[in-house]
Amino acid sequence: MSRLTEGIVILLLFTIGAECQKVCYGPLGCFTNDAPFTSALLTEPLLPENRDAIDVTYSLFLRHQIPRDVRSIKNAAFSLANVTGPHKLSRDTKLSRKWRQLLVTTKQTKIIIHDYGDTDLNKWVFAMVERFLQRDDCHVITVNWKSRDGIGGYYQAAANIRVVGAEVALMLKNIKDWKPEFEFESVHLIGHGIGAHAASYVGDILKIDDVKCLTKQSREDDVTSDDEDAGWWQLPSWLRSSEPTQTEPKPKPCEKLPQLGQITGLDPAGLWFESAESGARLDSSDAIFVDVIHTDVIKKLTSYFGHGIARTSGDVDFYPNGGYDQPGCTDEQTGFENLEYQGSEGPRKPMDCNHLRSIVYYLSTMDPTSCHMTSFPCSSYREFQTGSCTSCVHNFEPESGSSTGWFSYLGFRKRRTSATKCLELGPEVPSFWREHKRRAREADSLVPNIKAFLKTRSTEPFCLKYIKIELELSEPVSEGILSFRLADHTNHKTDMIPVGRISNWGSTDNPTYLVTVPSEFGRLHDVTVLWQIGAASMTSWWPNIVGHSPNRADSRRELRLPLQNIKVLEMPLSEITNFCSSRRKLRSGKEVRFTQCGTEESSYHDYDDTEG
Image 1 (tube, rainbow, N blue to C red):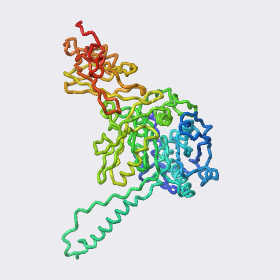
Image 2 (spheres, rainbow, N blue to C red):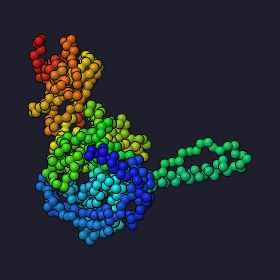
Image 3 (cartoon, rainbow, N blue to C red):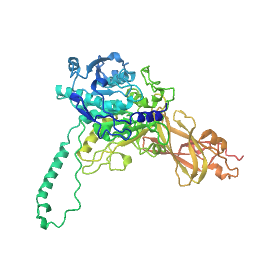
Image 4 (cartoon, helix red, strand yellow):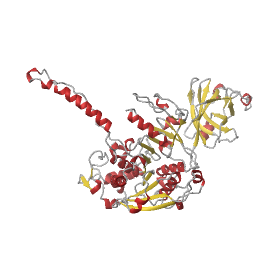
């Protein structure tokens, strides 16, 4: 059954809503199916089941016998033998004696919440526990909750995670009651699929009033009250000419402030949540910092029905490969083939590969020997693929009294420091984000959501290096196929990379392409260009072109590519390098090598230019 068909069947099954509008579960409080938990998909959204049916339990893990030297930690073989746990805790227990002995409230706390149909016994959960403890001396708590099998279990699980979130929030409050110095800001929740929205409910429950906003509104209300005492309505009725036709708009109610330090959403679930209001799904207000990795979103204009949410849901939303069709995912793969901790406890269906890639990417970035998965802010994946978004995120200091510029591509004001930071997918993201977001809120400045894009390889290491290539033409070009081969200073060469079809380029057009090479690729030494025109080349290099028949009367001038030089930007560097060749016009089917302008290599011919 396809995903689209499955979603339609679920919709038909649940068009009959629940009769009850409210349920209450002791210390968790009451739950209703009113806004924002209404849904366009359901006549009346379901209410969460009782605590026994969901059966939330916790497992605590800590470091054990870890070398003190950080360098030896990174180089040592780290395994679950270095982890103490799991130390179990049921939902009905406030804090066990064992937990009280082990918890150190000054340490960071990581909480992992699994997806619908999964358990905390899955090997990816243990892998994440291990890597968190390898990186930091922290607490790691895994949350287990039950969901019903069958096609109708998803929507019930979407309601049940409200109870999961309330249970986790209650557990954190119990720690706070036991140790008042415990700070919610030290807590980082990681949720996969529906588990990401459960994490958002934790953050929503723990929010506090914005005292600054409430104080400001209180002062404005006092001023308004004084004005009202002398208002027109105090006059006798016979002196009132008319009632006012317009009233001042009421100020927006003060939003509550998050206390949770961070939420990481690993491909948050999309079905039902895509159209849900912000209070019923993960969004940037649920924690001081929210980062999201999208790997299985609904693909527009197709029948592909992804597991994940497509809309932006955090402060920074990463879209590897556009958020869908992850390299290496096929119908036979599960997403864990490239990791040493694969197992039968993996995904239930092969189609889950894209959905699980969010976990795989995140785990890869937690490996101290792994490369950096650099991303680039951009408005869309299409724009990113054309090489239009090449700048990284820069450090800055907010300017008081203004809506400060946050990132260079937004065109706002900023002040750079000596260090330039790129957005990197993984746990390092908030290292410079939290403080900036806090300062912006204190200054009532705009905190825009950032959509960041990157490409990946099909296997580890997933990182790629990006090279933007811009062509400078001297004459118009009607058609053809363009390909590049790149070589670094160690003569490491790529295969010939087809980049696109030439179609009616003018002499003032500067076509740009974003080419990816392995992360170990060195500084670019030369670019070999292949321009082809003709039915054979069209078929072999660009299979999407059907029925092309070249005009045999094309002049010799039209069979040449008038390429003056090539501008190259090795991202994220800001320096542009010009590459030249002695040939100003490239013949169809002939490879021409371009090297850095001004070198001896750029002054000789790369091919025989004889007639024939």
